[in-house]
Length: 426
Image (cartoon, rainbow, N blue to C red):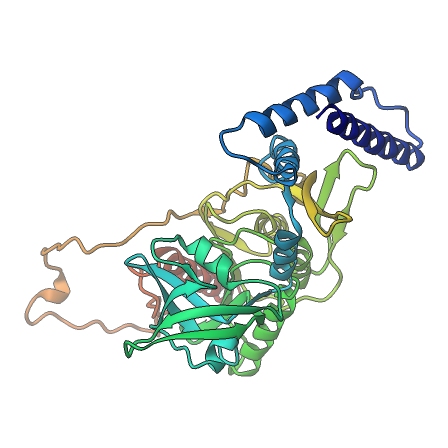
């Protein structure tokens, strides 16, 4: 035991001294004033390590304990710094690429059973004849009954090319055991549709490396299939947790001709500033950006840039307020760490961190219900005179129901109002 402790202390001291030496070689600034770890500090760590190893209620291997110590060190810094083992790191990288490795299904928990909601065309599940409504009862022999959704999804996902055995209860009642090979499944992050004929709706669910290209492709498709110019667009960032920053910057650049988009400030000398280049998507088209309290990180960077430049009206709720930069750093064992290294600032110098983006027009997420008002109006009276307008009026009606999506309904009213004001001013 004493030999193991000494080896651990020696390894920690060696790693610490190497890291310190490397740091000294890469900077010319004054030596750090912070206190360095002493031999007693490292002995305290090994004392705790051995106490846990020997006395914890359940036997735990050294690798698990060391990983727990690393996780604890990072989690104590702030809520967004974390350690990712090789599998977690690979999944995070796949997510940033807009893909994941699995059998190509979307599932939900219903009555404590894992039910398939959607089967992606060409995926392993589709090729095996699995359809929506089938129930997955086991993965690699592990019963899924009573498990949460996260555990079920973790079992289905894995490295591309690996095999997984899935037990499926089909809608017909037949039960089959299928061996499927996981493969990459592409996931779109941008969804769009025309609204009220002349308006475009674009939703970004998260920012992957392909989000900017996906958005531009869908904008161009809508423009090419629409008679004349769009009268306005809604960019929906509600419930968007962020993701990869560069696509959010590219999208801001797409809607701006010039000027600062975002800048970062941290401890290192490598501060970053991002500016827009000439050329703009949908130049002159009125724009509303929808946000809510779950709009975070890269989404807030995009909303803040468009707001500061007056390019879009921000509508909804005050955003989450995650204005910190996480750098993803590779480790030699295939694992990685996500480390907070700086803060974001909008072009006007506002810090997003713990402040969020205050919308220009605040609209709460509410549910509209009919109040059953029975009072009558002129139009309800028998024999009332009809109206005879002298000129054509503007129709503020919408195919979007206030009861279904009140915030979106208000966004369309604002866009139509902007169009009326623009027409009058000309």
